Image (cartoon, rainbow, N blue to C red; front, top):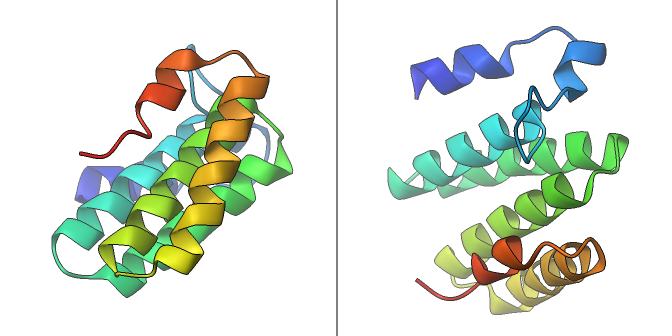
Length: 113
């Protein structure tokens, strides 16, 4: 998790929003990965905070795969906390973003584990 935190420490500005050849913005991916790791370790509240920051980054530079990933992560964390009322709208947003951008592989990642 420390390596992911270092990746997140990129200064504000242009590099923060780069994809570097990846499908998802690097800053968004780092935040979503760390948020899922934190939740696995029992720190769901901190994971949700980190995931929300990833969502804000994704919304600042509207990129469909990044938005889908951010909403998917928040939806999964909400489900993990037992909050289905919060999870469903987030997961639905993730599906809409991925479908609108013709990203079927992203939609398949929304299936239950």
